[in-house]
Amino acid sequence: MSEHTVSAAADLAGVSVRTLHHYDQIGLVRPSSRSPAGYRLYSDEDLRLLQRVVFYRELGLELVEIGDIVADSGTTDADHLQRQRELLTERIARFTAMLAVIDEELAARRAGIGLTPQQRREVFGDNNFVAHAEDARQTWGETEQFAQRQERTASYTQQDWETLRAELAEINQGLADAMLRGVPATDPVAMDLAEQHRKHTDHWFHDCDHSTHRGLAEHYRANDRRGKNYDDMVPGLSQYVHDAINANADRSTVEG
Image 1: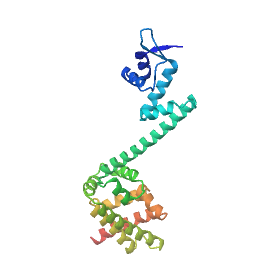
Image 2 (image 1 turned 135 degrees about the vertical axis):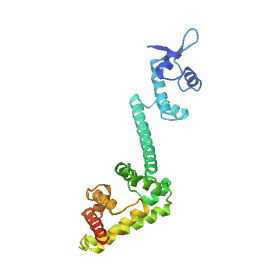
Image 3 (image 1 turned 120 degrees about the vertical axis):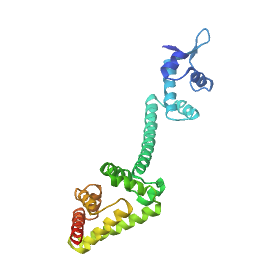
Image 4 (image 1 turned 90 degrees about the vertical axis):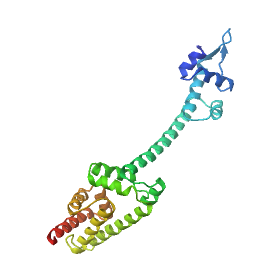
């Protein structure tokens, strides 16, 4: 059986000699023997116990709790490993949840949304806010429209967001109803709804003339995030919205 001095044991476990002295004093990890000169000597079994203590300590457990775990003589090494795995899994889950919160906060700031996390949940519900915000940034992040959107929305209150989302929902529902009734996308009813959509975007997010609106329509038809949202409402709605927007833009050219 090997015997290790306190400094060697500390090096092997990755702790300080002072820490080993403390563990000895509180009875957590005591050396099995001492040299003729009275120096602490740690056996291989002592080192295995020390490694368990160090692992649990790295997981954030208090020394008292660690002492209770390692003092249980009814557990085997396999039991200890299983316990370590469970604790590590729990820690990973906590860190993953923390990362999700941080990612959402970063996405909100990049998108120019100044609401608190609680306010965002109340406004956006369980929608995948991070994915939507990141999608918008990746699609429009280098454009003047996105910069303008960030500047405008940064000062919006929860009431502002609730109002604009209610307005947009009403417009989108009107387009869906028109499509289901068989109203052609070139009909004035559909074009008027498209014009409401353009003005809504122009008011709440960024300058949106008919040319810019046509560009948005192309993204809807390409079935990107917003297009998918439309087709989740009614299959084919993204194409209908695209056609109504373009018909409305054509109308504005004729009327102009």
